[in-house]
Image (cartoon, rainbow, N blue to C red; front, side, top):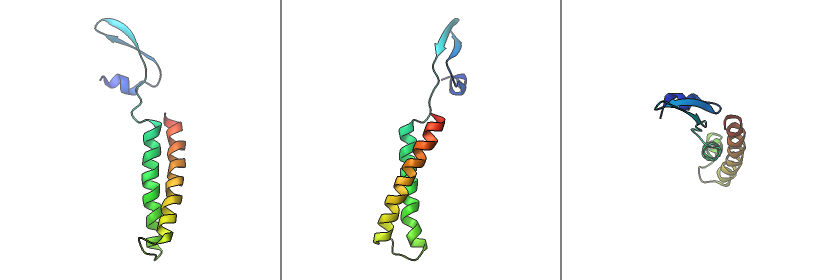
Length: 85
């Protein structure tokens, strides 16, 4: 893949083999990947916050924190993904 294709934000004209071709932009990370990454980070941070505050790692607060952090991470991943995709 040409480095020119990775930098292309809109449809570009690229000369390949002496012929001009229209090339669509390359999306390196889809919206789904942003959402999954946000969920993973959010649930990890959300489950660890009660541990820092003195609760047990497998307490109900840790499970609730993981759920809240996961939902917040999904929201954040969706918002970030929509701004870049």
